[in-house]
Image 1 (cartoon, rainbow, N blue to C red):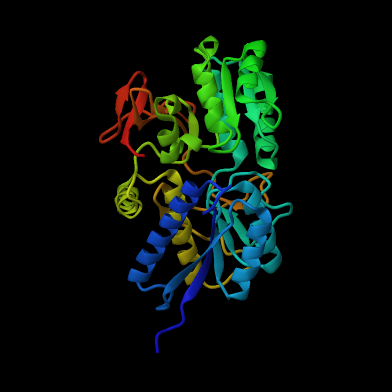
Image 2 (spheres, rainbow, N blue to C red):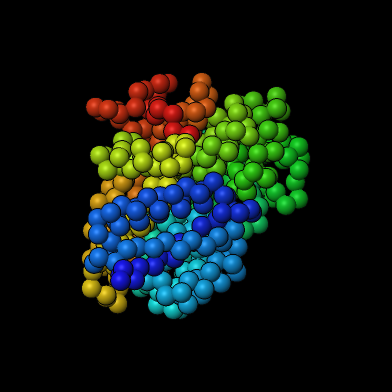
Length: 378
């Protein structure tokens, strides 16, 4: 008789209004790592079985999925991209004492109270968005506007930006996308004399119509459009916007150069996806790799305390970070990148968490226009 599988529940946004491309890449990374773990003998000879549930970025649906997966007897939970649904999943996992490794959601308050069962791979929003604010300041922007939709996540991002920018002599104007049309937004940008507009709004709507409107308004020809949440990482962005979607800086969680493991995984993910993998696919792979290691170890009250795993983007260890109620990898690599205006299929690294453009080395991207340029990745 074949040994019973070790089940891992996977949460991802696979239908709208979730960012479905992120969900697809996340699941691809999880499945690749599960397949490799099984090829290496599984968990003490038992195969890993991934049980995927679609959250559609809905917190109620995410919480219900956790309950369903717990009833199915999963040993742990993985995944989720959207912060609002990840918070709901984390709360249920903590209440059940079910280990949950959150792959991609960044909101600092992933749980309201400290939760030993929950850990996170993605950097906290405060860490990544402060890096983004430093990039804006380094590029000389002092009059910044955010086009924001109502959301706990977008509100947290606005607060982080304001708290970091204001003491450094910059201003931040909040423009409410629940009341403004893209054309009215352009008028507000002119009134505020903004030099940078940040899209804190859903994709494709209203983010894509806003980009089109701003790009076509000749009065706003010099304004920078930014998307710290990472929308331009995905191929749908480039397909919908073409050249208009280039030169929109965003946060991504990749090193400037992948090591041997990362390069091998990138090749395998590209074959599975039929396109270049996003950083979210690497987060999925690393998540399942960590969970497999946790499940191979003796069960502890705090399953993350002694983890030390080689991931695609560096060694993964978890620690306690002030203000974060879960175990946290502090920190994954953080960079600000954009799509090259000369070739929107290529990415340029503009800034890193260390406050500089990455220096090239052997096998590193070529340099163009003062920034490092990666080959086509999406």
